[in-house]
Image 1 (spheres, rainbow, N blue to C red):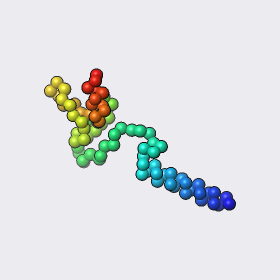
Image 2: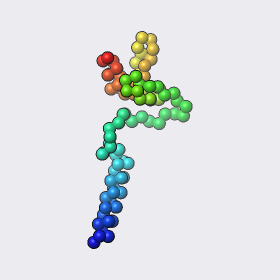
Image 3: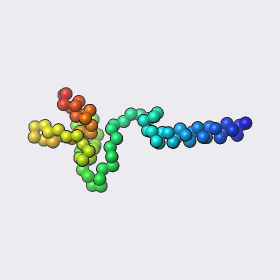
Image 4: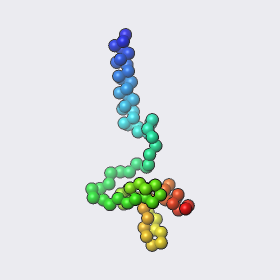
Length: 83
């Protein structure tokens, strides 16, 4: 009986871990938008709103006073625009 309980607990734990790896949002903390791996040597830029670093190729851009400003997401761009 105790052997079946231990096996059941181990199986439950393994299924739980597989779900967490496959679906990080389940039971995990919400985080910033997913960013694909940048190309080797690609320049990273800092988002002035949330201070996250993003690859230039994946950043949202907006020109302000003739200077290009980069953002990690559309949400950060909109928040910055409101200020």
